Length: 249
Image 1 (spheres, rainbow, N blue to C red):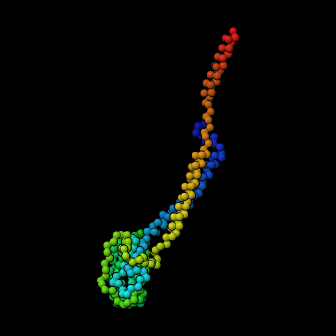
Image 2 (tube, rainbow, N blue to C red):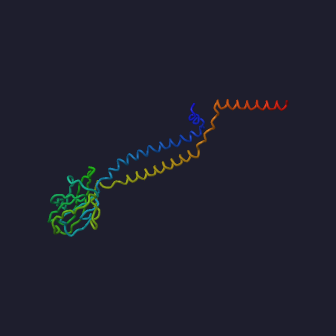
Image 3 (cartoon, rainbow, N blue to C red):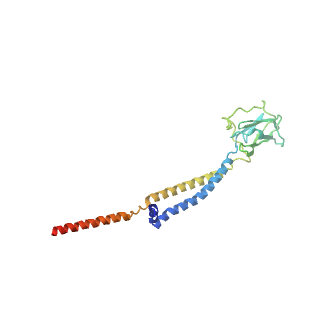
């Protein structure tokens, strides 16, 4: 039998259990960890949806007159062909006019003149770069009738991220397609805890292997070496006997 196998068989049964148990625990920990990682891979694209980060007018603003245009700013570039904006007045009529303008993350549309005082809502529906639709509304109030002086303002050039300029309006409120990512952070926390637990088990397992591995048993002398040793011992004994006999004579 090869020497390597003889060493393996020489290890006590208790030592073999020491090596087998932690591996089973690691397999049990690996299953939920892989399941969480697969869920995270699916959930990551969901966080890539465009999110409304600013609006002009601000959500909940009270204006003395209707602005000449309204602008919504998103955190990512908006697909131009699928952007929709609608300005609804207190009478339920639509007051948007002209073509919708998309520049990176900014979406704008003009507003008609002669608007009545009351509560207004800017409803929007866009399609994110990942193909997911995002809808919502920004609400504001106009206290005076008519539109503010000035033509429809064209949106300024902005990077694709669509970040709001300094002093711009605050974040608008979306009714759907935004947020809902708290469960993703919960999964991240659970995954981090499992990773820490796995690392701790691995460290313990490695330490027990280094401290508890039994030394290899001494190798038995081969038959050839034993025969040679026996012959040398016999020869030595014979030589001693001959010397003693010579001395006696």
